[in-house]
Image 1 (tube, rainbow over the protein chains, first blue to last red):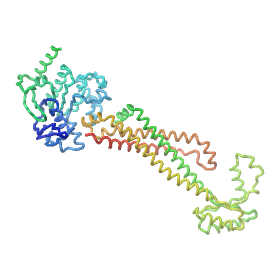
Image 2 (image 1 turned 90 degrees about the horizontal axis):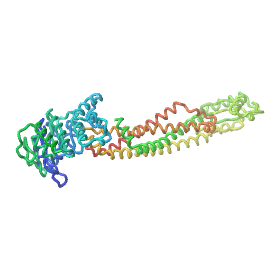
Image 3 (image 1 turned 180 degrees about the horizontal axis):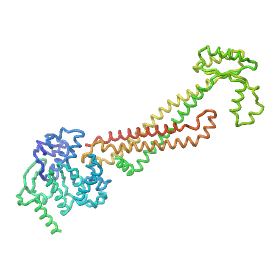
Image 4 (image 1 turned 90 degrees about the vertical axis):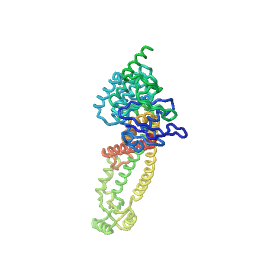
Length: 248
Length: 289
């Protein structure tokens, strides 16, 4: 589904990514880990074609995205949902209007937009908050709005750039469960994160980066590379949630 | 998109008001020029249809002599029309022109008014020659012709058209630049929002349309306000102009002209607003990836 072949990205003299190659299959859940500046966000931006690689080839759905131009870039982005760490919501639009944006862009009829926004906002528990503006929401609600906007158009790929970075542990777990549910529906998830507990509990594939290089690409892995207990992600997340509640 | 454009206007009302006011002033001046130009044309056309030479005839002149002179003039090939005005007709014209002033009508009879020949030439350049021919005729007492009035007015209108075209061009440029600057400022202020739209898959036209619609709304609002202002000015100055242009059938102004003026100013607003905002989006959305 997503293939990086010898991809490098330089910003002037700074090497953000250096000759990295990996492949992600359809429906996979992949964590991108590593310290700040390791190149996690750069990978997400390259997949979204927000940045262009300096060298190498990136394919999404067997399409070389370096070669797509103009309208094709928009069509490519419409197939990808993105959850940003800083939410990137439109401040002058309500929750409803923010979430309906990808459907409006696709010129979906208004009655269908209303129906789908209601379904999605209900799924993320924000239907009651639909008429509020971002400034009136709490951090977790903002991130759930961002997730709702990312999943409403039923993308094939969901990119999440440190989605729990600004959230408390309980809210982080609620969000992760929503993202995991999307993965269970068959959406490919690529999540950049620093959250050790989440990575350790979900036991998914981990691509660890350091100084722009892949230092580890391991399936069913933990954050630090240690062996993870063979539990299902649901069991693990429930366990973590209980632990968080106890700590509080 | 209309909703978004309306939101953009509402959220920065002072910028929007400034753009509309500047454009209204420019369109108002353009509207007044259009009224003056069309009015001037009408006056000129009216004067051109008036007899250009009037030859007053001597008292003892006979109808055969008049007919002979008419035929003589017509054979020159330079005459558009010749009309004989008898003493009685001259009295009727005099009465009509002075019907509001009874003092001037007293003691005036057909006897004291001369008969005349009213002559229109095909080409204004031939007027002096025709006048010379008429003066040489023994039955002609006096010759007057209005070549100067027509040519002076014609020259004035030509100058007015040139100056007007320059001024209109200049004002249109100011209006386009105003829209470009205001919309450009708004695009710069919404840089982050535009980037988000692009990241969620919006194409350039989805981002561009609300700004173009905003510019078009500025143009249409300015066009309408300037039309209303120039129409009110025309209504207000009608009594004065009627007295000043007595005898020239310019008033009341035809409603077709008023509607055409409205359509013209709205079209101008549409084009100027649309062009200014399109240029702004071209210029300021270049950086959107």
